Length: 107
Image 1 (spheres, rainbow, N blue to C red):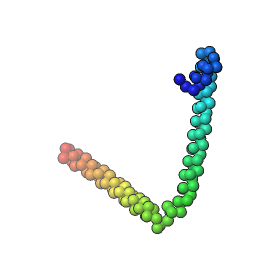
Image 2 (cartoon, rainbow, N blue to C red):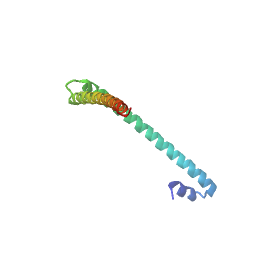
Image 3 (tube, rainbow, N blue to C red):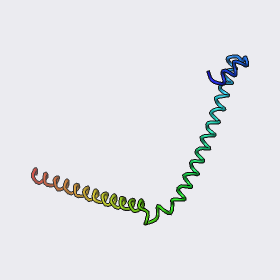
Image 4 (spheres, rainbow, N blue to C red):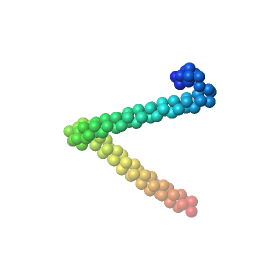
């Protein structure tokens, strides 16, 4: 039995009134939780913004090891993507040659 039930039964409130008042109590509780979550969200956003602004210069710095690693990984990814494109072109050419060869042999 919830806190609202105990309070309502001790006041001698009927079942229909009890349900309405319990809904009212639950609604107020939900509003309180919603306000607390909104406050926590705002606080979290402020904290993240402060962290981002305090580290903004470090990320762009060439001396920052994480930035260097990020650049290296980006360059490697770009190279792998270029290789993948070249492989696809060679495969397309090989397929075209295989089709041509099958036509010549079959015809």
